[in-house]
Image (cartoon, rainbow, N blue to C red):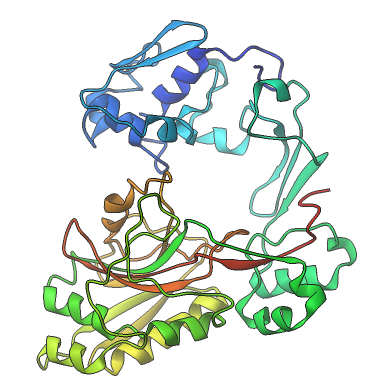
Length: 399
């Protein structure tokens, strides 16, 4: 295996990639291996990467160029899944530019970044030093991939429908809600879509640092109108309801319903749970047009139960990583870090307000969920996208 400059990839470069993931400046992303090696969630305080750049975290060794050895305080049978995540991406120490590596990564896979116009376009071309014989998972079919950023979901869908210069294009955001009826009714357009389940879950998360009253959180779960939400999102072609924390695609999935309230919610049950209270909540929604419709639907739905909802808009490119003082709830997207869904309890700790809603090319149809966090008795109203139509030519995803 080789990097994009032809230099060899050994266990030492992979180990360094893991070591640099202890750097607190590189916030975000999976932290399973770091936590397992440190035996604590505060892994960056257990081992200081900046002070030990020439060494490795305790428990990680490289006996030879082809071997990585992990020694954990506790068994972690999900290591193969965790090791497939980005924290094990190899990197030579000399190529580590810290937080700037994102702008010009050093490729070890089938493609390398050749152009990066921030917020506008990314161009990936073939890495001539990548050997398919060493990588049975990835392929190198198109000559290049061109990623363009900016168009909203509706404009993106319209461009693909029109063909022309976009005839060999895949829409990352899926079919826009406003175009679902048109695409599903047209046999030719429908034949160019994919409708498949994915592991993503979109949900409405409650900030438990602000909403401390358990009965308020329970009432939110009883009040949610899942069918109404699905209609707002485009109907059954786009969404299906859930009543669980994790989507059905998760290994070992079991269906349950902690707050049974029917497909339209139980407004009277919610009112009875509130017992005359009229909680004032702030709902954060991204400025995406589809999310704005979700915000309106949720506001109207919840106010029938006695809640007073203020909708606050945040840029769709923003990422909320901690609770905001004035915010009580917001939409966010969650995907398990691995097929077993072991990341679920942590994700529900996302008692933070909102993460902008993400719609993937293979994104699942949004489905509303009423669930309860097993970690904190928090109501997490969630909707996953177990399947969402994606438009594009079936034969190409790049040029």
